[in-house]
Amino acid sequence: MKKCLKCGNPVEDGMIICPSCGEQLRDPKEQNKFEFVSIHLIRWLMVLSLTLPFIGIIVAFSIRKKYPLISKAVRKFSLFGVLVYLLILFLAMICYIAMTFTGVSFF
Image 1 (cartoon, rainbow, N blue to C red):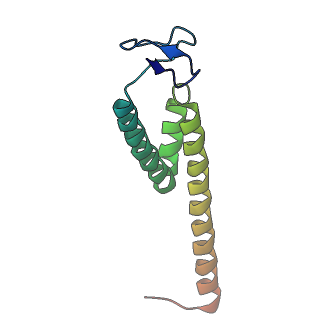
Image 2 (tube, one colour):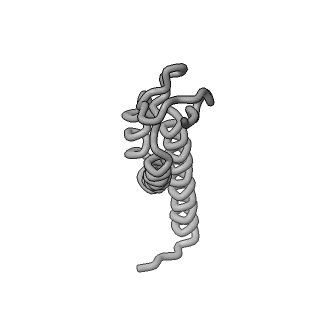
């Protein structure tokens, strides 16, 4: 007999759903494969959110019901990405203004 990972109650071999809590029972090999895939998916979503924050926000809102924790993390990274872009824009404007007043030109 194996135990349910969620509630710890013993379940018979071959059962798909725990009779006590309703948790779907998986083979540990399948569970590790799922965790491996989900970790890579989360990393990919974080990189997407930082580099293309507006697409990250769209993705976060589209997955918010099915994966609320991942959606929250993607939203945070997207907002951080927006802040980084705004900081870069601000620094570029300062450089432009400084070059305009000093008369320095690259051309």
